[in-house]
Image (tube, rainbow, N blue to C red):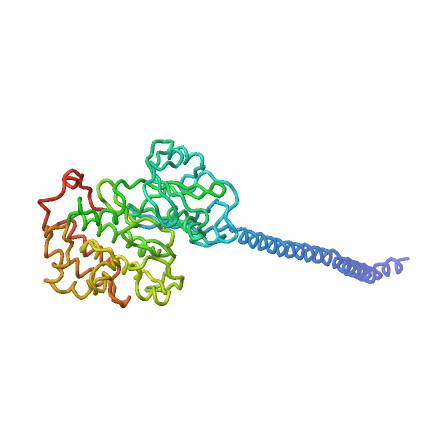
Length: 437
């Protein structure tokens, strides 16, 4: 009996080993079954990721198609830009809201930025109905007609708020006038400078195309420079020259991208009640290259006598083309002559050809001055202005100055005139001197 009690414990170890073996097998079996949930989760993750990627691709394709469709419909937007110059800002991010004909659709200054949705305001530029402008001009009566331009008629009008305005009615048949309308609305809604005529609003009511500008009480420089009964005096002419130079300086060197007027001439320079000048008529304006002396190839448009020779012969347009035109206007201010006059004696038909060799001769430059001035000018200032004009009308574009240089050269002559006419006409004695900007 004692022997049996002693042997019984010896059977313990096999039992323990068996139990351990059973535990290990059970653990391994359990671990083997754990692979199935992990694979299922991985499959689900892959499926969800694939779905998201596919959805993103489809969304991108959809958006691209929407964008392409918008481009075809003429919707155009670009980032807003504001110039650092507080008095002259160039603003973008606008959208025209006029219905175009198929022939000129997309012909706007910055491309096809025409939207079909109606609008009531356009960056501070008001949208008028044709009926409102009829009321403003007494039915476009002849009594209110103040001018006739290349693309239509100009009327004086009184808007509903009492503002005096100049209302340009464009010809319906003129396709170039339609393009000019789009360019002027697009451009003058973006450009704001005291040296540019302000656009108050426009009308694109059905087939009617009208532009509404601030009224410039003294008409164009063309009308005034050849007005022999009340000629502009020397100091007024110099102020006008500086105002015009500042306008082109703003267009060329402050607007982004630069703007080439392409039709700068006396008839497109308007004078306010104080005979301060503002540049108008941007129907032929062209966006220039942002590169220095960058060229733009385009059709030759403009006015004979004002066209730069390289532009007239090749169609290569730069800001220096405007500089040439400015030089011609400066010659008109000095001489009182028109750019082309076949009634003049032989050799004097073309103003630039006749004037250029005389501008650097101190005796001859005095002889070529406008007789209406009656010698009432500073000879010293005349020589400086003649030198500026000679540089501006150089046949080679590279030799012409930047408008900034012209402005800096004219400022001393206007701010500190060495001569003030003692025989100014009554209209200049009564006018209020306005400060230079």
